[in-house]
Image 1 (spheres, rainbow, N blue to C red):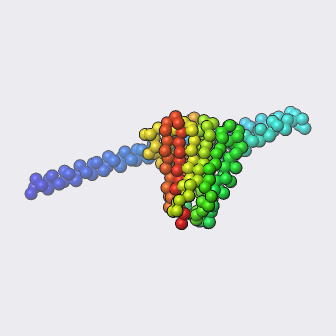
Image 2 (cartoon, helix red, strand yellow; image 1 turned 180 degrees about the vertical axis):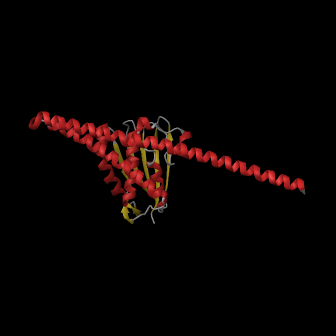
Image 3 (cartoon, helix red, strand yellow; image 1 turned 45 degrees about the horizontal axis):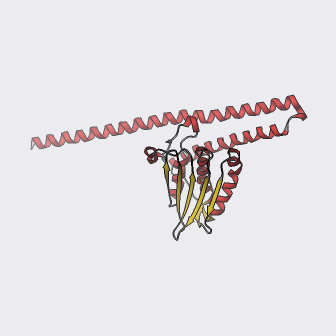
Length: 258
């Protein structure tokens, strides 16, 4: 009986030690992610502001030197660059705010009757200048009557993230957006012929602060796809990716029609 009790106590302590080791590893991993995120956030928020400041100073100096003779085309190009930086900063700040809301369980959905094809066309039109600037063809193949009860603003956010990523990682190859309608679901696919994602990175792609590419080369917090997954799942849907390294990626969003 004493031997049995001793064996049980040793087993209990061994299990406790394993649990503690696992908790320690998890804590170290969380600390590492936090430190990496703070480093990335500092860089991502500061660098665009510095570039924005330099651009504005350059425009002001040019106006001061040239006055009424200042080249309107140069002013237009400068203001377009300023506009792109402001939009990028806005997206980064919105990502941070969404992380706070999601972590606190405060993501609220406003479901309205929505025809998804109309929203896709609206978001695509908004991206046309950026796609044209980089020489990236944007193709739409949208089934009609892709209707459901969804949150318009949040789906706009998901579409914006997917089209932005396709442009960023697509290497100028065509980006194709497809809508398919079944009896129960609407399927949205965003396809690019870009850099692709290695198989070993796919499982963590939708995790918070995770990324499959270098933040130094491509920027961002590694939050957009995590936020997109939270939004889609909150609407009863599903998001996944199929990718081949060096050939491109296809993101699939499934949304219930009910």
